[in-house]
Image 1 (cartoon, one colour):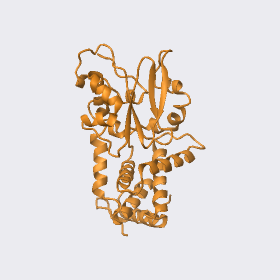
Image 2 (cartoon, chains in turn blue, yellow):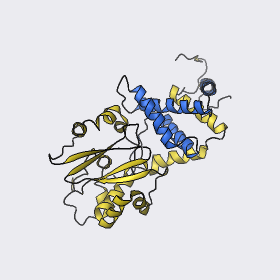
Image 3 (spheres, helix red, strand yellow):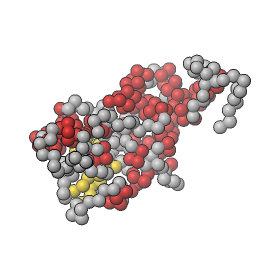
Length: 105
Length: 206
């Protein structure tokens, strides 16, 4: 074990979500304590009816928690987030392959 | 989710729903100046290339080789880690717990997935799974058995529940037959799981 182990992200968006959350906490948007409390509550709710495997479902709960925190704080209201998501989707569907994808916001 | 595909012209592959939602948040927060893209890049680079169990292994190897360091590590892990240039980026308080013939230590986070990032990097999926998080406290010996770890009858199991504020590092017992080994060689025996308490270090010569 002399080299770094491969990271445990199975998709790039999971790594981006992780970095975004840590950066927001570093920037003072929320304390890490508040984050773990909110995330723990989401995991409990999701895991109430089924066993979470700690992979995709874990990051789905992570994303839901961050969206809720940012909607509640007003940093990223739900309507604004939905609009930005739609803009990204539109951009992907209309940008010819090989060209940079830019949302029209 | 139905999409209005434009079959007449090739377009870029549409990312998954969560990927689009992450991009949406990023776009909004960067535009509002609430997050710095360069800071995100730096965090990604750190966790993808620099931080991992090799750092924890260096700490354990030094603790095995240097009794004075071990004493400092047990008294104040953060200060001892700094001696090796390892610091917790979020100011997490790290506590080292040592295995002995009498006690085996095992780490979990029942709340979510708190983990000693500066020493071990990003936790593996099983650490974040309900199967582990919900069972580790209730039936630690059964969980250990799933990992192929069986302990002598006289060895007690102590489970440490991590929080946002306190993260634990298990110091496994030094394998036999390693007298006189230098730290670098010792570090090659230290596995990630042995520092979580769900495994043993590799055997010398294995």
